[in-house]
Image (cartoon, rainbow, N blue to C red):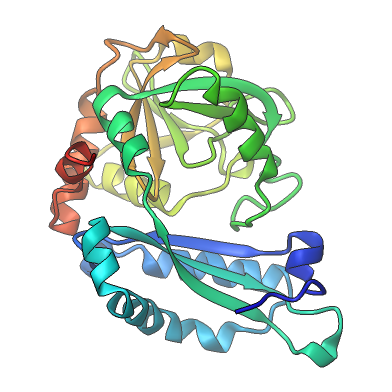
Amino acid sequence: MSWSVLDYGSLYGAFLVERIRTFGGKLPGGMFSTLDRHLHRLSRGMDLLHIDFQAVLPQFPGLLERLIELNRELVDREGDVSLVIVVSPGSMDRSEGGVQCMLHLLPLPWRRMKGWLAEGVDLVPTQIASGAGECLPGSIKSRSRLNYFLADLEAAEHGDTSLGLLRTSNGLVSDTSVANVLVVTSSGEIVSPPKESIVVGTSLEVVEMWLRERGDSVVFRDVAFEELASAAELLLLGNSGCAWHAASVRGESIGTGEAGPVCRWLQERWVKEVGFDWVGQALRAR
C-alpha cells in the first residue's frame, strides 16, 4: 500500500477522516447507528474538497463489515476497535489517478478510557485555538489536527487523564481532541459551545436527540472558561469513550469530582441502545 507524495493529502493535509467504533465486536445498528451520520459528514467534506467519490458512499457499510470480518481474530482479541475511513482528493499529477481512499482499523485507547471512566478527566485550558468554523467548517472532520496534538502535549504535563481544552479565537471554550464538551450548570441548564465554534461530533448529535426525547434541551451559546469552575457537571462526548466526565479543570474539582446524574444517565442509555456493556468492558481493561 502506498500514498503518493504528490497527493493533495500529503502536500496540504487535505485528508477527510471518519472514525466509527465497534461494540461487542460489531457495528452498532438499529435506531442508534451513527454510521449514517458519519457518512453524511464525510459527504459534506467531499463536496467542500471537490472530491468526486459520492457514488462510492453506499458501499462503505458493507466494506466496513468486511474489514471487521477479515480481522475477526484481532477484533475479538482487542475486545473492540475503531474503524477509520480516510479520503483525499488525489494527486496534483492527474496521470497518477484520482481520489485516494483507505479503510483501516485503529486500537481503542483502553488504558486512557479506563482512567476517563473510573476517575474522570482533568481538563487543561490551553492557548491553542481550534479554528473550527473559522479556518475550517465545523461540520466536517479533517485529519489536519496539529492544533489538537499541541494542546494535548501541554495537557500531558498534568497527568495521564488530562485533555487539552482548546479555545475559539475570541478566547471562549471550544472542544478537545477526542470529544465535545457539555456543561451542566448549577441551575440544571445543559450548555454547549455554539456549533459554529466546534467540530460537531456525531456523539453530540445523538446525545442532543436523547436529551430532547426526555424533555431536556441543549442550549448552544458562548461559554467562558470562568463558567467551568461553578459547573455542576462537565461532560465529554466522543467516539471512543462515548460519554464520560471531567472531574477537574487544571486540578480544581468540578462538583463532587464524580460522574454526575446526567453523565450516568447518558452512559446507561448508551449501554441500552447498543446492547453491550461498554462501560464495564473499559473498566476491566488492563
